Image (tube, rainbow, N blue to C red; front, side, top):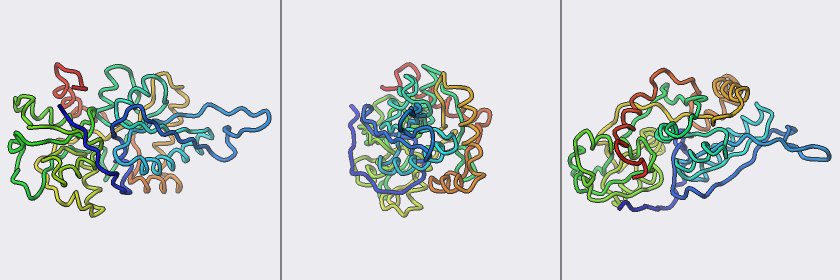
Length: 313
């Protein structure tokens, strides 16, 4: 039985690309309503507020960080659309997917694993993909303490392993696929814990709550750049193939005109000064249209990780 690890929040100001994952309670939502001054959301005599565009986010790090990050981005979108925007913070991938599927949100920042899971039950449409360090891809890293004897995956047999989220490609599915390739039984690890986020997985390993974890490479890189004490205690045992970055998607049934406007805003925001400032603050260089086959490697891992069982198992 996997346990849940609940460390204190790590107060890091990291990249928005880090904010595509999750914590633990699928029902807890934080809502933020934003709109351009003087826009259609103004209220007054004879003025009716327009229904807001609802953007769903499942956070990889602290809710406080996600609030800051997506608040600025939502304000930017609201100004460009001249329309009110409401941000809904979901605390894991499953809740974000359900929100989009049930039309409780219009646009979502999904993780790659969550996006692949969503495609099994409905048809989210990719609007844009973030480009970080000149690339639209990232990796899963299997990490352990530098002080430990582990040098490769095989050394983790019987050890305690930390996952971030059930739907996480880099934080859970990659290691499941690797064990399937090695024909290892489900009891390969001595125990597992769910930490709720990649930075919490780093902390769990560094503080000896777990012996190893698989984490998002962009999170790890950002933590090291911030001189994070926990990240500095870890070593990388294995690096996965590259996977397509977590996409920004629209729900089924969203107006084609609105989807077209949103896509244009995302793809062009690096061309204006305010857009550049917002992108810099969230450590994304720009957004791009997805390249053909961008998610092929992730699809192979997803298929192996979920073969013959529910993704939630």
